[in-house]
Every structure is written in C-alpha cells, then in structure tokens.
Image (cartoon, rainbow, N blue to C red; front, side, top):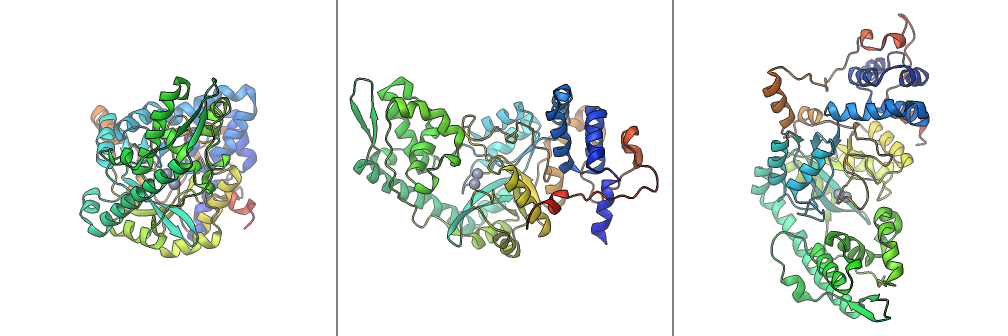
Length: 455
Ligand SMILES: [Zn+2]
Ligand SMILES: [Zn+2]
C-alpha cells in the first residue's frame, strides 16, 4: 500500500525521539531532519520543546533564522491595495521580503489586477511567486472564500466569463457602498470631543462617485470616514483601510464581533472610549454580491488554477461541507491561517488529509496593525508548513521561481529540490545520536494529528 510506504518516513522517530532531537540536536540537525524526511508537521513538536525550556530559546531563535536563511518561509494569502490591503502589490512584496518570506502569492478579493505588479516586484527581490486570487462565494447559507492559485494571468484576462464575474462583484460593491452611504446619513457615526461637542460622520454618494482608479467602493467608504475622523482630531487619524475595516464592517452585524479581529479592536478601543464613538449596529447586507461556490471553483479551474478553500474555520465549515467541496473540485484547504485556533487547525488538517486535499499556509495579511504578521502564525513562528512553491509547480501551477534564478546566477550550481515526490530517507541523514537501530520497528504515523482529533 502506497500509504504504508509513506509511513516509513517516520523512520522510528516517535514523539520522544523528536523531543530528544529538539533537546540534543543542533538547530542545523533539526533543519536537516525536516528537509530529509519532509515531515514538516513534526516541527510543531520540536518548537514546543524549544519554547517551553528557557535554556533552549537560543536554539529556537536559531532555527527560525535558519528557516528564513534557507528560504523556506511561505505566505500564500495576503491582500494588496487592489482589494482591501494597505500596501500596493510591490510594497507588499518588498515588505514581506524584508520579513524573510521567500515564497508568496498575493490573493486579492475578486480582482486579478494587482498580480503583474506583484510578480514583477517578486522577480526584482528574488522571491518565488505564484499568481493568486480570492473569490467570494455563496455556500448554502454561508459566505465562503475560494482561493485560486497558479493560473495563467493572461488567459484569465481573456476569459470573458471570468472577467465578467469579477466586474459583477465590483458593481455590486458599488451598489452596496451607495446603500451604506444612505444608511450612514440616516444613522451617522457619532464622535464626541472633549468639549462635549457631538460630531456626526457620514458619507455621501457623491463622495464615493468622486473616486477614480481601482480601489473597491467599500474601501472608498473607509477612506472618506478616515479623512473626516482626522479632521475632527489628530488623535483620530488612522490608516484609511483600518477605518474601512472598523466602520464599514461594524455595520455588518455578523462581522462586528471582536473575534473578527481582536488586534484591531484592541488597538482602537481607547479611542472609542475617549471619543465615545458610537457606530450604528444596524445591518446592511450585501445584495447579489456573490457567485455560488461551485461557480467560483469552476471558474478557477477554467483559467487553469488550483482551487483552495480559504480559512474554513472562520465559516465553521464541517467535514461534510469540505467533502462536498472536494467533489466539486476543491483541491486544497488553507490550514495554517492566522484565523485558525490550534484546535481548528488540527481539526481541518485531519479533514484535509482524510479527503486527499493538500494543505496551504497563509495569514490573510492586510496591514501591519490588524490580524497577523505576514508569514507568521499566532505564536510568531514563521510559516514553513503546507505546500511549497515547488509543490505548486509539480501540481501544474504557473509559478515564477525567482529565487532559483538568482541562486543559479550566483552559484552556477543546482539548487537541491526540497520537494521530491517520492521522498525516501537515508538513515544517515539523521543526527547520529538519533538514528534508529537497524531492524527497529517503525511506527510513527506521518500525521499523528489525524489520530488525535475527534472526527
Ligand atoms: Zn478570506
Ligand atoms: Zn483573504
């Protein structure tokens, strides 16, 4: 059984031995073990040991640095200013490169207009890049997000149906913004300054119409609000896209929970208290905003992309949902998302493995203030798990391996390919102290998570 063969990857290293590796091996040994076995999930066990023992904190940091140095950090879910992110695509790539990210995709909501700029920037900084998009879609009574990776951007631009669908989303955003403008005039945001004066903030339709360019209408709403806040008091100045997030989304009751973005809520709580900011909570849901999930999946397949289910934990999707989506054509699930608690992460990883879906890493980064740091999980560890750029390429995705071309120029040598399809492990690859004795029974399951989580 092919599955059984893979289990040999464990090579006798059970959890105790992994803990031993963490304590006794060097950071270089640990990296070598992960690269040789491909058992990147085991990095969790190792990191836990390193983090829990203050004497090992130096090794922990060294390991994180080695991941960065070896260009293993991946981040396949970020937003640029072409949707609701703060940075332009080029700024975003440069920002991420500074943080040590080596493999990346920019996945704007319902637009592919920022991809070329991001791709060119990735080439400049020597970062591997895979084209991406995040489509909003309807699944039963929920809104889900479907990521698409590795499509041919030129082909997507020429696909009339695909582009029309994106245009429909833009138009419905515009209509939605017009509606929310009306609402904001009927029920303005109230800001009370220290002199006791109440300021009413609202947005008019003309203020939205005055915008030119690619910024989505819902972000424009936030931009106007931010400008008006800043004109009341300098203290109320905030990045325009944060205003969009706080004030626009607060008006959507289902998003007005603190769990939506604790970082942002915490950051602005003192302002809300000091200025007694009152945001009307009445809902205004989006009309005709979304296509069906099936349609979104099909349209990604049609332009040659790999459809991936985005952060299923946010929508509390079940195994049944994911199973049906797999039947529909979903190929992967985003697991290493900042939006997932450790429990959700285990739960969805197990489901993905059970249904033969690949796993991706991405934080859903929008700006440096709100949820998540680019390329890092909630514990501040760099993202090294899930599919790599090479895996994307092996699955037939369009990828731009810019770090390889740089390395080739510099070293005129081959760069070892970390993602061999049939990984086989030599005992010699393990640190000497941890090599299994010959004939030892090998029993480590490559996905212990699968066994330990409920369903
Ligand atoms: Zn999303
Ligand atoms: Zn997103």
